[in-house]
Length: 518
Image 1 (tube, one colour):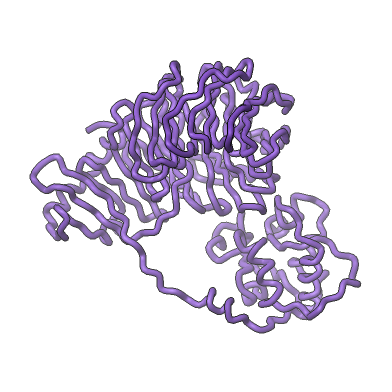
Image 2: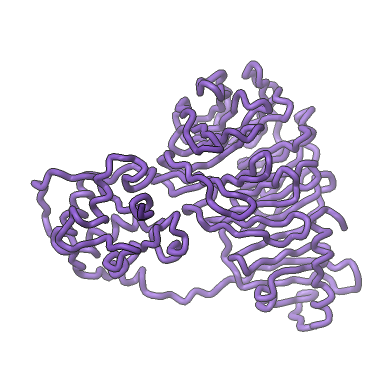
């Protein structure tokens, strides 16, 4: 079967009423382009042509591209019923009906598109403001600085700068359960790092728009990636860690997927969404088990109990919920918070739950009764994510106050504050709780020692061939093409000392840095 019939984001439904009238005949520039840009081109664009699972090899960005089509024509001017741009939307099968996993367009939009094809797909007049948007613009890349202080000599601070900015924020980080790999996510891209050598293992771009969360399965074989297009469709995809191949595309959420969690046995995955629901999926087959709709606003996060018999949620409606994983029925409501609850984590013994959000204090709850046990201050402003190490000895929190905080998980008290230099959106620990990874608004991944707070390494990756790893202790390593673009300063002055730069370049020192060794 032609994959276009499954993935073409054509944006119409069946229209049988041909009596609708129009004030003026629709044209591409005035009427069609705005509809396609809002609903279709996030998938169907030139950047996604090499990813048929997303675009079906079709771009809808320009009129020429629409006329050209993909492997097969999608537009037959004057024949709406014979144009895939229209006819795919007559499908009654939801898995084939377009747009996939999103609300249908309005009747007016549908009629406009159909009428446009019927009229022969006229181009119309290119508006001045549209011309300004599509005209090529030469944008200067901003320098992003990486500082280090070598432990030998009298060099002072050495700074390596790359013309790679501005960078998209790192919104998600996760260690593989064995601690050997680390995944990080930015808009449209996931990088999997070797957490023992600080080198990228794989880049995944077969995702839709923003990435809000990612998690490894308990056996480390599957990576779940969550995100989507705001107010349009959620995106939850499962990839093989071994080769990066797409295993399942779990559609159904009508707004972005903001948080995900695997059950401890790896058989289920829960997804929290801005569409106010949590969905529970079979991780092997990709089938939906149940939908929890007990929240009245966005659901930001979800976390499983250690036995997998319930999960906890965090919502914009200022509550958390404890939900039975078998029935999808709520057990308890965690209430009493004054602002949005954005983060939730379950202590590995299953006895306590911790939540936080725009009200930056951490709230500790009895998981068996839903009773709040403690409210503990620490962060100055919002907390974006919470996590425990596998032993349940420490909890960690990522804050908008540019800190990651380490907590004693048994006493619910703060034990260390780590300055990240940028808003921390995401946080994760390795299995031993020794290393803390933070995903930051400055587009960088930073790894710290949880006990001392020492900054061990900073990671950045662009596409598959551009990356850099830097240790503040005085070492760097990266792709040759990336390093070739670097500018250097020592003691605040430009430097071209080739011998110095060669001495600081060390794959071995960088490997030690990411492992937490000096």
